Amino acid sequence: MYRKECKWCNEIIEVEKQPHFASHVSSCEFNPKLEERKRRASERFKGVQKVERITLKKECPKCSTEFEVTATESEIRRNKVKNYCSRKCANSKTHTEDTKKKISKSIKLAIDEGRVEIPENRRSKKVLKFNCKLCGEEIIEKKYKKDRKYHKECWMKVCGGPQKGSSRGKCGWYKGFWCDSSYELAFLIYCLENKIDIIRNKKGYNYVYENERHKFYPDFIVNGEFVEIKNFRSDLTDAKINHFPFHIKVYYKDTIKPFLNYVKNK
Image (cartoon, rainbow, N blue to C red; front, side, top):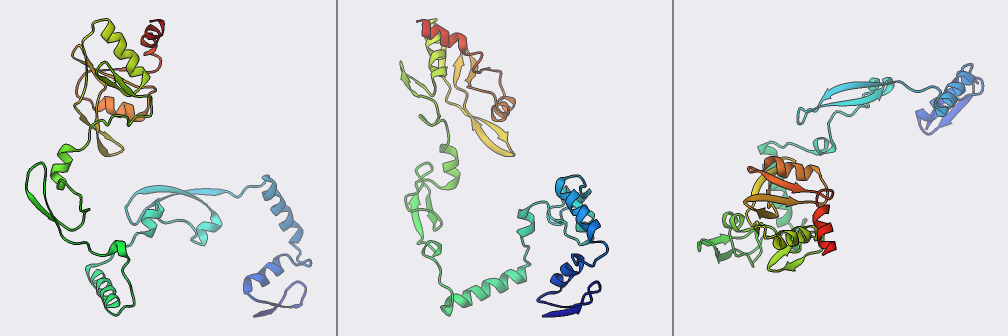
């Protein structure tokens, strides 16, 4: 308990914590600054008087990224300003090799003594042997599922490519050509009926989006020129086109209309 005499009303105030006593002193009816305090609080509540916020430039101690933070003078004085650029940096921890060894030793000891039980999905799996379907080499693994058919290097060579039916549009076959949308179908019909040389592209090309590498597969090759058909323009589409090594013609919703009208009239 906290017990002290109020300097305004001269009464002995007994409260649980010191902040409760400070609250009584500031709102005491004998406080000569009470009315002024109420007025300023009312103006702040109504938005008439706003607390000035100061913009500071700080450097994250974890990743050295510069960032800006806004805070009041009171928050700066009480050091209530964030020091890290994100929660990821604030929550991350860097252990020394000695600390890692101590943690590992204590966990192993706890497991041996039965104080900690390893979940079923965390227990070490049996060693798996299989022959890679691409190179034929025998692989010994214990991290992956038992139905593996390739090791990592070979899987990266055979995986990927456009998957039929993976798009959000209506899809299907037309005269031996696979179409992932009605726009592609209209463009294909126009080319076939006007004797325009068109084939489906099956080769992928690398591009970078948000600092990650991906594969881009243009839709068609028309008279030796690559053609891509999209509903609308986006940052992802721009990244594909900007990284494409050859000339490519892109049809969007507004430029594909002549082909749609052709099919509707037919």
